[in-house]
Length: 398
Image (cartoon, helix red, strand yellow):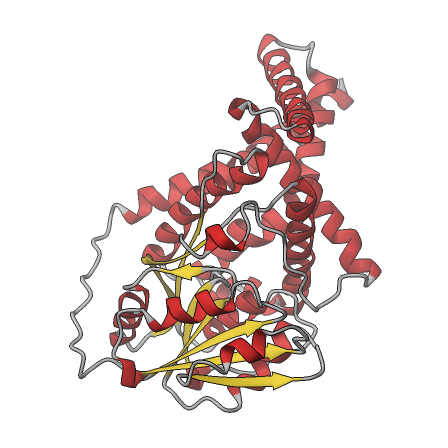
């Protein structure tokens, strides 16, 4: 009886906490935000628009860099206020040669490849424009992205603005494209987070900061975008969210490429939690600590453990009552569907109903793998590009 009661408490706690992390948190944000009204952003004339530095960190981007630069030059922003910096981190292909064809681009090349964070730190020493925008080489921006982002800086408490990552759907995509569905939910959470207080991190594909607020971060940082944005929050500013400024990219070409990318993110998330312990001080950061704990820390550290606890504890009490038996059967069905989704992915079979349970479990496998990668010290800070599903020709046109 004692064991049964303990297992019941463990199950209720783990299942309830897991539900709150992935469902209840968003519902709570939505409900609280409906009690308040949003202020409207004031319009900004061309004369009031600040000078903007666009920083593109690149490593061997020969297939796409020309299209990336052309996309950047085509943005709806005064040309005399737009300054493009290509930070080439030890590129050995024709990336630098191609970039030299554009007089509007300042090339900051280093023969030594040290990773994206080191490249950003190196570039920021030379930038004087009041607003710096970071964007990846493998994404394309919509024409109004910059203007839609910089208008937020009319608010003196805004220290950074994050754009929106969009994963392009493809008829050829299997579970890897479920990332698009995941990001739609993440976009909802970002909107509600920013409306409540501040965004909890920024999209590395497209985000901007007040240049004066940037501070160098350790070169071995895995999630540069997250640490940079958190440092701004530490200084008393907020990160705004602009969904109409978006960066579009293709899904990973296969499960192995998606696995590598997510393991790196997981290792970086764990690293970030260890390096930012002060953000858990609710007496200093108030509402933000609540957001940080349930939107980031709980996912990066607790979620996989909660999944295991919920399953094991439910197994002990499954035959004590009908409701616990039904819940246990639901868990079994969910994990069977996840396995079936994995099998379909490996065989190229398209059954979309299986993608969600598979991708949910897949993410948590990546989180655990990221733990091992981080503690073993085997996660290389130098980024490895994930191969995208359709290739660079399709990316040029998205």
